[in-house]
Image (tube, rainbow, N blue to C red; front, side, top):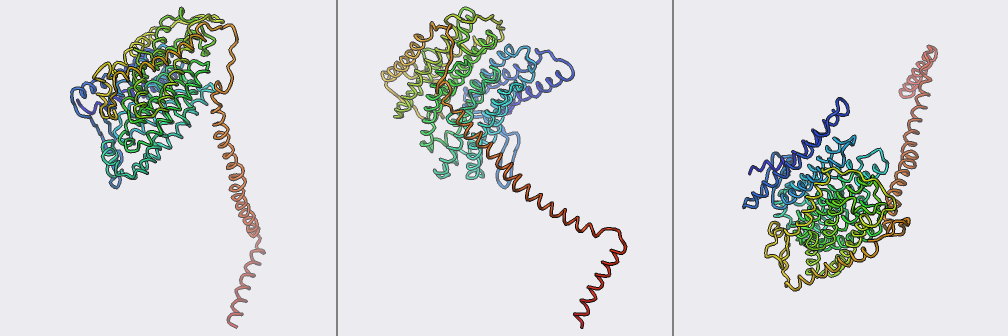
Length: 627
């Protein structure tokens, strides 16, 4: 295969974004363009990129070596060479396949969800720019090129979260996502700069880094590893940089699905897996990463238990599931973490798109306690949401069971018993809060009957596709007790971290524990919420409902602190010291000028007097000197 096609996987959605943006400007300023044209151009791009990705997948499957395409040298100074390059290996193509496939289904869904919106063309322009940025991130052949895509998805998240910018809260949410990610990106940049300083002249693509990174002292590698992980904390919303993700629900629901399932939040996990050769040398940083993931998973699950906004519950569930992924990659089981990225993409996209269908059907209501009784009114949405909820709850044979169970088993086999215990407890909480959402939304009797809004087939069809994926996706990573061949581990062999063989009886026992824990969470949710009394007013409160007041603490420490610092610099330093000193100096020159200006009076006698005074003074000087 021609390696130049790697560039076209990125260029096609990027060109589509540019064309859609130009057509949108034409449509609002010159002549209205039919939305069908926008739809066709928008959906065609990710599908085409997916098909090219499939071709590369088949080629690699048939034994082809990694593809590398470097169209030009971007930077060449004093021996430092940075090429604009793209890498098509098993990891990047694996990411391309599910990013473009899930992205395509979300595009189709968005066509129905956004129908009739004034910014329809602009929305898809941003959407495809988002896709192009994520594909650049995963196909980059070096960390610097990756960073371009890394910043690109940050920019697009800002544009899409604040898409309805006439609403102040949406603007605040977009700003929050952008600023928090800049904090994480500072860590990423520091890691890149240090790495470039030590090995930049030897080569800075992934192959060169893998060969030469061991030459860097372990203490420096530790700093690099932590700095890069700070970037991952921001992008993948882990403690303490998770606060932007729940507020990101301000954007249209297809944006939430794209961010949570296929693009931005998976970037941090992918980055850690891509730098596996670095983290293998610093397992203590990996252990730190795993504990951050475990506590993020538990913390987000606890908060989700008391939320009432259907999208925010799903947002906290994403933070929690990302925590599981970081447990895996932190313990060196990169392929296991990526397996959960893969299965999560299906059931999380399905959950958000199902939630979006519910929101549309009930007139944009998002409080689950103002829904209820939707099972018979939305039977298709009910069925697919049940599948997705079972999948995220880790109930077999749905996809989430296989990947989550493997993460827990890897934690136990690495003797990280605390992480295993936290992960297991979080699994019970996940089943509880997800079935709380499910039972409250679809069962019981709604105390405020609402007229159902029609859902188009462009919204329904992607739900069926993703429901199938959420059901069967886990079978590509069957555990050893069921199959001698784990397709995920086979494909990502270089990222498996070494096989951990366990006795079949032990493996079955751990599976049984996971299932029992998940079922226990479901039973508790059933008892409490299946026949919930919707006639009583819901007024959630308390520290958990208020998310432990972390946002308020951040606002007090950072936002108000920076505001006070800014006012001090602006008023006391700038106005009180700098401006005052400059203006005083200016005033001195002005006064001096005025005094000198008095000599310029155009009076001949005054000028004659000064001339006489000057001549007399000079004459006196000569007399005294020569006399």
